[in-house]
Length: 456
Image 1 (cartoon, rainbow, N blue to C red):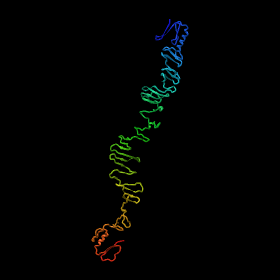
Image 2 (cartoon, rainbow, N blue to C red; image 1 turned 45 degrees about the vertical axis):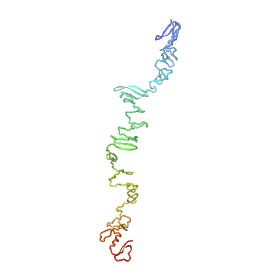
Image 3 (cartoon, one colour; image 1 turned 90 degrees about the vertical axis):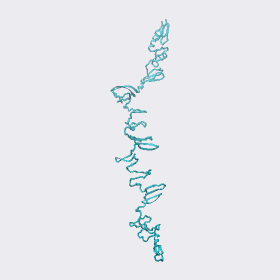
Image 4 (cartoon, one colour; image 1 turned 180 degrees about the vertical axis):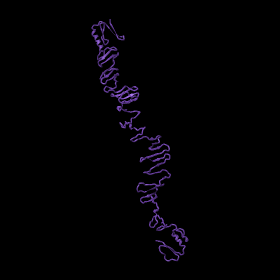
């Protein structure tokens, strides 16, 4: 009677006739009364013991059958279509060949575990090799006075660089570089660690240092403070026409429009004052009155160029004297009056002549003083005459244009100088017919004749 061999699920694997064997599976099965079954039976037991270790898979595997792959040194199980690793990682210094998806490999050099995805080995962990030592994030629990906190510590080469925490606390046990831990990211203080790269915002800036690490990385101490009086050691440039505003109410503004600069006092009727340190005391030297527009200068006004007044009214000076050419050396100096034509009128002191001159169109003559007049016109010709204390004037000759009225015989008080015509007319009042005016005596004559001697 034949044997019927059933599998675990009840399905029939084979039917073995008496005295025969069956090799439907990886093992040899015997029929009833088969002679010489002992060797085959023992071989079946060895195969089961060694999980059919071989470099090639069993030829007729059953689903669930185990096979130790001698190529990869892995125990594999048949899933009905192929042998797959049974689990666990293969420890080797190099990745296994001919891996299957889901295989694990323990890199014995770096102490890291990889998983095969079906196309490549991907690292499962740890993220650092044994030679790199602890590097990356590590979840830790730190105790403090109020209990304990779970934190994420970032290590680099077995050195804790920073701690990421959800709360602020002070660890009970000493943590090198972390006297206290803040909510957020706390850097190891012993490393001088800083954040490098681009940052969109920061709560604080460390201003303890002024040494820049590069032209693009500026130390916090080199920034101008808003909350404190600060000193800037280099030029300040504002590349905007909007300018600057100074004062609690922005009373002083400096702006630019079409390259014109405007300095403005914006508070109503308030002044602009300029002061200096005069011997240790503050002295106001110039004030622009905001209510009137007047400008007051407490000291001297020195103008190196021309002074021009655009007002059409009279300019008033309260000083007793106006001084020109101060410190200019020997040079003509005075007053110039612009006229409607191209010529101007001047009154000035002529230093080459040492007298005042006046005139127009570059034609100037001396301005006569009393001291410039003389009493003797005969000895000082072409000079202005004045009388002596006695009222006398000496001249070489006097020419009068008008004849004047006839001389009265009864006028004995007149001090007017008579002309020749008056004298000739006066002679008519006397008898005689000849009235001679000559430089020499006339010849002949009659009683009553007049002879007027005229000097040559």
